[in-house]
Image (cartoon, rainbow, N blue to C red; front, side, top):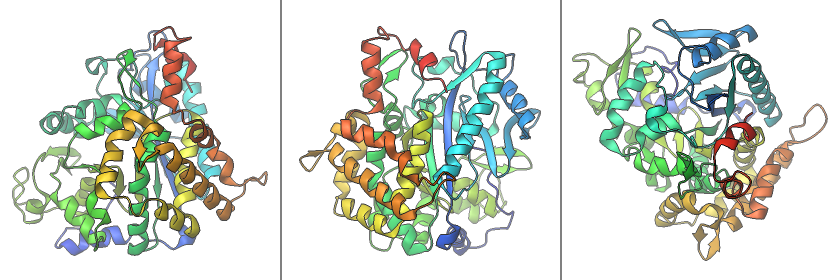
Length: 454
């Protein structure tokens, strides 16, 4: 959920342009890259409160302070709302969650260095004003009304619209953090296979990365409450996309789906025009109530497809969206998992074989059960742990086959070690946190703000 998309202002005259836009994402394997995104909670170290936009210990202060490292400010009106540098960006989620969108890189070694560098810079600036950050899937302490809202136009539109479509959309906006990876495809057929495989397996990632068991200081009954929130946010734009598994899945089929999803806004002359609930099809016919007579451009389309939030999202790449935020090691493990599964042909075949005969009903049930039961979720008489172990082993084989070595001669497999430990033990990160809460933390979540800080 960053700013307006970077796409040309070319007028849209036919649906074929929308299909072509996605098809143009196809790249030869030599050009495949890894783009990671991670969000984290920023807070004041004195009282653990979420940061306001302005003030001594503030989001704006962080954005200004980071410019010493060569980051350039992006403004909306008088407010700095993002930073850019070398194909990377730092953006804000609605509740001030601090997001790094990394550059498209070739190896997990590079993405891990990128994340480490970013966290080091953030820590240097934060230490000066009593600010720290941590990775969890859901804010463990503060109520929705305790979270300051960032001054970004599109978020005002979304905040007004979200409660019309579900009960937890505002929590999604203000109190969740995720880690994601964006991966390439070579053709329509390659996109379809990767989309199906990653979508079917996404609940296993939900379980392995489950890291949001607390709400307002107490256990909430879930292991990934962040993932649960998406089930009650907006059914038009979320979920497991059953059509992806149907015969005839294609770029055009995804475009048809996206055209059926109501709009949020159109970005015009530096302002967000509220078009919430209105139809992009009407926009293409010059009949958008919010902009009578206006025609959409390709940037409107690029913006629109960023307002869809399924478990795997198609843009000009595929975006894995199932994982909770977490510590540095898991920010590297998430891209390692999906690169290992999707970027080696043998691994992709094996990963698809693992899930290809799962039914629509089974996939939907996994989506509902994984946030609550984690690796104990049942599937065909076995716990999800059984399938997750195979998934991690397949990814390990894929990374070995890729054989992308660090300067020290290491391949990328060691980045999966945190997941190997999780699937072997069957204990999700959330369950480990609940043990701390019921033990050494003495039924308080406050220690999380010191012990889990980056």
